[in-house]
Image 1 (cartoon, rainbow, N blue to C red):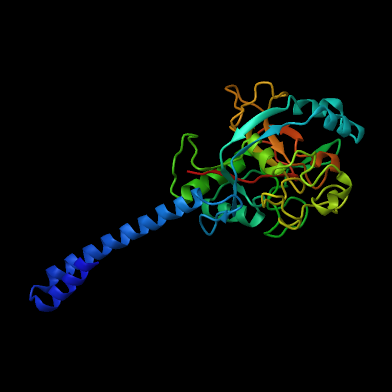
Image 2 (spheres, one colour):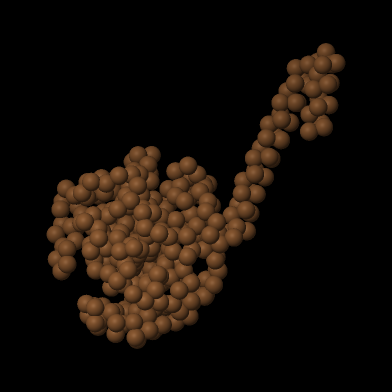
Length: 329
């Protein structure tokens, strides 16, 4: 800065003012660039060092993110919980893939404070021209009928921009993630996809449990489910605006209920070979993808943190949405 002041004084006294003014302009531009770079670097450090529960947003179109603490937990459900679930409507086969319980250790990461909303997804489509496909299933238990004309813009019920986007396939969700990475500079990490991504199944369950070991993040009893989540008994046949039920202990909303959420994992019917470091399970031969959290259409026993579901990657349904995760530096 002292050099810049010297150049300005020199310009006032020097007859060769054009040359001096050019030097001052170049120096000023350099100072601005260095200052901006330092600010970006400092912001990254601030997020990295942020306390768990810190909320941040990387850009105006980016979703709000919550910093999740590092830690470990028992992933899956104990035998007693599976017995409880079968007494309340689950088949033994539907809960058998929640075993064996295993210890998973995770580093700190960030996860979407909310499910991605219709308004956020609309901004992505508007700015990229992404051709999200037509055709979306209208789920009902035990059947699901596909409507060729249904899509995220027209799922068959009215939505606001604060409702979770639905009728989203796994590739549709991944395309949104790629757009976020491009918006913040396309930083490539060891995952190969950039800092934004879908959460791994382990990250999802860890964030959903938010430090609890009970079947539901609010406790052992599903009789109070209506106070905490949107499901079959209280949804009136459609999803609801994100954040309209209380957050869990990590400050994350709608981890269960409202819409099923895609994860990055390939499905396996057992945790016997599951990663223990929080990473996503992959398969070299393609796979069904895991979705978590249950939804507005299904009964309360499916709101358990350990509940798993799987679908083909190209599956779109009025109960299917997603939220994003981010690897912290």
